[in-house]
Amino acid sequence: MITASIDFGTTNSVVGINNNGVIEMVPLGKESLETKTVLFYSFEDKNFYVGDEALSELKLDTLGRYLVALKSFLGAAENIETTLGTTTYLLSDLIAIILRRFKWVLDKKAGQSIERVVLGRPVRFNDDDDELDQQAQDRLEAAALQAGFKEVVFQYEPIAAALSYEKDISKEELILVADIGGGTTDYSIIRVGRKHAGNRKEDILATHGTYVGGNSFDSEIIRAFVVKHLGQGSLYKNMGKEMEIGPALYNDFSEWHKFQKMYDPNVIYSIEKFIYMAYDKDEISRLLELIKEGHYFAFSEKIIESKINLSFNDSTQIEMNMFEKPFTQELTQKAFNAVISHHTDKIKSTLAETMAMANIEYKDIDRVFLTGGSTLVPAVSNIYKELFAEEKLVHTDVFSSVGYGLAIYAGEVWEPYN
Ligand SMILES: Nc1ncnc2c1ncn2[C@@H]1O[C@H](COP(=O)(O)OP(=O)(O)OP(=O)(O)O)[C@@H](O)[C@H]1O
Ligand SMILES: [Mg+2]
Image (cartoon, rainbow, N blue to C red; front, top):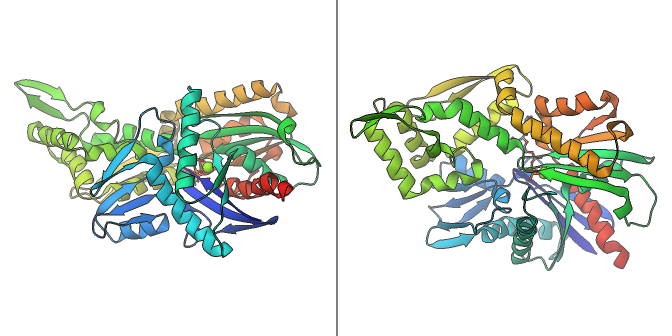
């Protein structure tokens, strides 16, 4: 039997095949296993492009709409709709377009249409509301069915990562998995390396998570260091009264998945009004330029690049040279750590909750498996370095462990029933 597995990530996706127990990861990227979970709708040829192909279109300066972090909408209460060209798409329609493309790649590799898929999911799509959490999974399932799969099974991403870790060990261990990606922080505490018939339920001591990830860090960089160059705080005069452009205008702007809302004609109109009224027009004009001139992709790349630079350096320069009037902003690791501290505190307190759920102490953990791109942020990895002995930390396969583990899990779900 051939089954598919998809780690549909907020930022990156990874897919694989399990063919009667033989696992093959199938590259989605031109040069890597993973591809960016992005969708580009071209206004020129009215087509959708997924992943690396979307990035190629963006680099060609094709006119269109760039959609990112769609997974972050899954746990929202409201129905998300986007109109592109003359068609209105639901969130699950857009995700189905991405999954259909992944299925096409997998089917091609398998030489047949694969009907069964294991999809990863964060432990919490929505931190506070179980119904919305279930609705999020239902939306993702609807998208997978729409993409052509006939049977969909879910597994928690940090359990999948644990299965991937397990393949390399020879003895029983109690491990903590910390999977911190673009959208969410996910934990599992699980006993691995045991010889058993496949029912792992009793080995899973706890699963827990929270809606904090690399995108939360990016938003803080934008809010603290960048929006001031795009007009926030600029003075303007309205009906004889002097005022400052406040932060409200920038709320949607600073979160990748909400940026779409900036294309709303009402938003554009209010920016134009501010440009008219502002004393110094250069900064607020950049905001309009960003929306209207298609600079958004380049802008997001610069923000993410600066964060990644800070994983290896004490300071970096954000050089926003895509604007007619470019600007540069310095960013130090110290200042970055300060603005993300409420997020790192949350990552830490969620870990404490996970330990309490498992009813164990830090010293009981044999290994800590750190995975997901955001564990590369020093302020994040330091959380674990402070709580656990260095030799207990395993930090590998940050982008592929979940995808690989889902392929292993596909074998556990379906093979026994062969
Ligand atoms: N070297 C680095 N330093 C800091 N952050 C990084 C680094 N490399 C990648 N990231 C960040 O890691 C995140 C992506 O990680 P990953 O691919 O594990 O997430 P994902 O699986 O798509 O998301 P999720 O699991 O939350 O749905 C992004 O926020 C990205 O900016
Ligand atoms: Mg992930």
